[in-house]
Length: 89
Image (cartoon, rainbow, N blue to C red; front, side, top):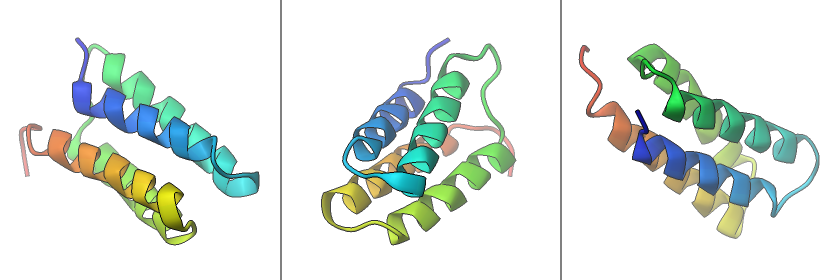
């Protein structure tokens, strides 16, 4: 099962990573990879897992500027939209 919002978030993070360097770039690539894996797993992520990714993205958006920050914020928004469909909490 594919989860479109998660795929979109992963792509946005990869795009953002390609526009920066260093530790931030590595962290963005790592988040992109992890979220891509969540998008194709048989069982979707729970609220806790999504919350951890959203917190990391909030931190990364604050450490970047301009288009990169906006792209990371949009990826975070995609996770938020997906999270609305997750049962529980």
